[in-house]
Amino acid sequence: MGSVNEAEQSEESARRVSTGSTGLDALLRGGWLHGGTYMVTGAPGTGKTILGNQLCFSHVANGGRAVFITMLSESHGRMMTHLRRMEFFQRDIIGQSLHYVSGYATLKAEGLDGLARLLYRSVREHEATVLVVDGLLAVQESAGSVLAFREFLHGLGVHNALAGCTTLVLTNRQENAADPQFAMVDGVLVLEQQLRGLRAVRTVEVLKLRGEAQLLGRHTFEINAHGIAVYPRLESLYPHPPQDELDLERRQGFGLRQLDEMMLGGVVPHSSTLLLGAPGSGKTLLGLYFLESGARQGETGLYFGFSETKPRLLAKASSVGLELRPWVDSGRLVVEARAAVETLPDALAHEVLSLVERHRVRRLFLDGLEPLLQEPIEPKRAASFLTALINVLRSRGVTTLMSQQTQVIFGPRLEARLEGVEAIVDNILFLRYVELRSQLYRMMSILKMRESGYQAALREFSISTRGIDVAENFESAEAILTGQARPLKAKPKRSRPQKAVRRMPSRKRSRS
Image (cartoon, rainbow, N blue to C red):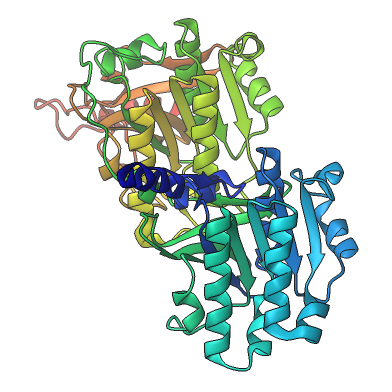
């Protein structure tokens, strides 16, 4: 009989209560433990009150009952005014399954004992399965001693655990990690707002989660219409590479015969390819060719970029004979454009993964790595972030193309803004300009292909109203020895090496 009770208690303690934020649930490996007591700490304005309300509304929407007790001077009416813009807010459940109670007057008149009675009575009368106490600092300041405050937290935790009520207490940031209140709760969540240059970035960290695994370190979040939206660091969420087997017999091409021949048919499925080149060299257009080629073969493609709006991108493709509108209308091609300002790398990555899953994407073109890997991401983190993104895309059966600009417009040097990317990706296609007789020519070459052979020779290509035209062979590019192309010099005849007639071919060449 005892073993049965122990099993029931174990099953009860293993139940999870969603925080109302999918990303935060991921940090907590499923949410708060049922019946536990947790502390959320942070400076004013970091989102504690919103998080507490988000928990209550989410819990009630899933069939639970909640009580929100505030120790702050802010009236409930003013709080409701601030919450109305949130999508989780539901006015009709207030006073039914969700109750708001003010505890400030009780604390002032009756002290800690009176407040404790109010909390216990509220949980019992409203049959609450979630309790949020906002303004724990006021309780701490009224306690009079550390021991009294510890006893208050301990009693609250024991009572609500027996009542099957999950408790969240919200308080201001405590700098001392050894503060006794931390020892009296089952978990501690820290919300912060940091300045990086002129920009403010919000971060969340799970400092403590008693007896449970969690994603360690700091993770970014934002406050938007959904409430608190947490974006776990990609490399902490997906730390292991996929264990899939590559199908080297299959290829995914660009639909450009000459380019596909250079790649012996195309790229290996589920691989990652970097289109590296100067501005205007044709990176975006090549990526669109890759997506269009996949659409013709029944593979859904996703364009996710930062420099072109959807109408401009489709018009740009149409101007070179690449008609993408029918594929967009049929859902075979998904086009998403974002402004490259105030971006959170993890937020963008999670959005891409969500789109991949929703549309069952098989070909992805990330048009511009810079917004993903630059500010506000730490330089030392860029490589691990991109590695995790590529790994999770590969595990989901996606073949990925990415574009990156080089700093050198002319010449063969590879000076990119983001270092180390070339070592992470599987394939690199290098696009560059050369100058010949005051004209610019485009050249492409394959610098790298893992698990595949390829033709390494340079090939000239052009872009016109008929699209991209790649040269049949390398002969048109053989004069290129360095970044500055020069015409091949004719060899002088040995019998008449010093005659002035040599000037004539020179003038003819100049006129041509």
